[in-house]
Length: 299
Image (spheres, rainbow, N blue to C red):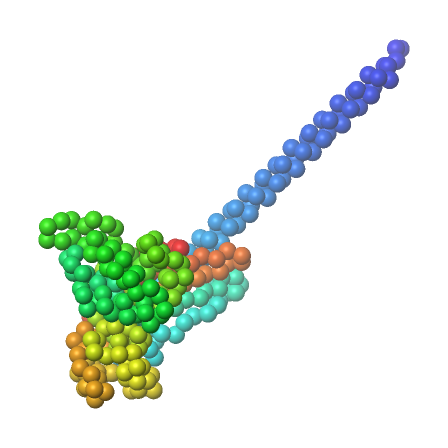
């Protein structure tokens, strides 16, 4: 019986070790890939659950707005719709805390509608002046108002031309205009909106800045004094009530105001584990109190 030289036995052992190492590496890579796949599937599942929770919240927002319309002839800051939801457990019965929902409804007619800056491609000087005033009050460059007005005018069809630019859909779109930054958008967000058509200001939900913008001859100090009375619970019951109080304060006007709103913005966030999904939507409420979704975005 012949013996195997030691050098050949060494080569065989090394080859066997290399095979074992390669097999172990392949097994490790396979396990890692399975782990990554499992993590991706878990994340996709969590995102799907969060998205479904947000759609449910959107439907609930429509119910709340209908209930508010049935309960009151006015839209006010103490309405059913005005109460935010923070970390509400909406998960399955066995683990409701698995999905946490937060959200808020905002009255968009309590804000200045940028669509009002222009009509059929022609800039409204009064609306432009109002936006310049707002920017000045917020310590932003008033000249930015002309940039916005020009973009709104270009996005509208005129008598002699079609639209020349895409329309703004939300205030966040201002960040794409020259001179605007995300910080500008953050500062302006509480005061501005973008609605499909020109709209009137709801004096029961507007800020003093927006009210002073909307009514010519009313300065910021007068608007603050008028709304302090409102915020003590003396809500405006109709336009005539507002005009009477406005005149008592020494001002006039009020033709561009209402006390009931049709446009609302819903912002929500659902958290499932480490996954967070956000939603923004614009709702329109008709005269019968039924709300329809005009657009949805998942930022």
